[in-house]
Figure 1 (tube, rainbow, N blue to C red):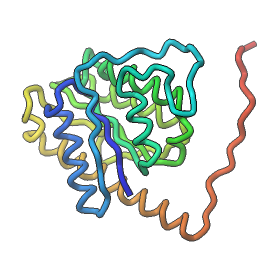
Figure 2 (figure 1 turned 90 degrees about the horizontal axis):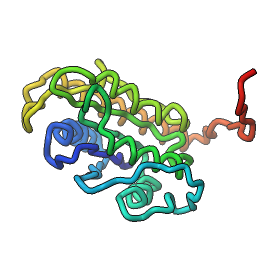
Figure 3 (figure 1 turned 90 degrees about the vertical axis):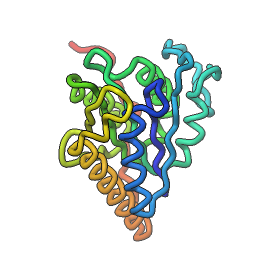
Figure 4 (figure 1 turned 135 degrees about the vertical axis):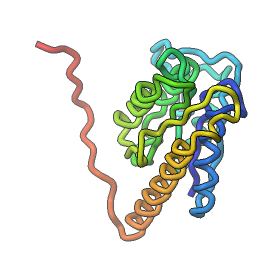
Length: 206
């Protein structure tokens, strides 16, 4: 089993990375592999609603979206990490996830997801809430912890000083591992995936 994580910060080794790394180390101790996908500092397009998504993902291939989608097909669980900008997730991770989910939401169904927000001080729970909405619309079980999945720190390395935040990250990992193992056990016992109705869309309110 493998968990794919996204570092939504342009800083590849900052506090968001450190929070994800703490989750990853704990997953490894539980026998589960992980990979941190770095968004980096390059440009990422917004979704423009062109409707030209293909079986391979987004029609635009000049940023990391389709590379991530290819990895996501083989992953069993996900963690999305973001720094907090103006009490909100980074614009780059939202542009990225809008296109990932709009073009390929079916590959995330029934796979657990967790979100992590990292800030100097405020805006963490609002950012956490925004990222969780991708899970709710894609039939993904959401992984919680013993507190909201947040870590505090401004300068690189300060996340280490947030002992409760690091504890929360480890508990996210334990809960993720437990879910993955339960799902695997259910599959071995022949438990079928839920039936899903599709086709009805109400595009107006009277």
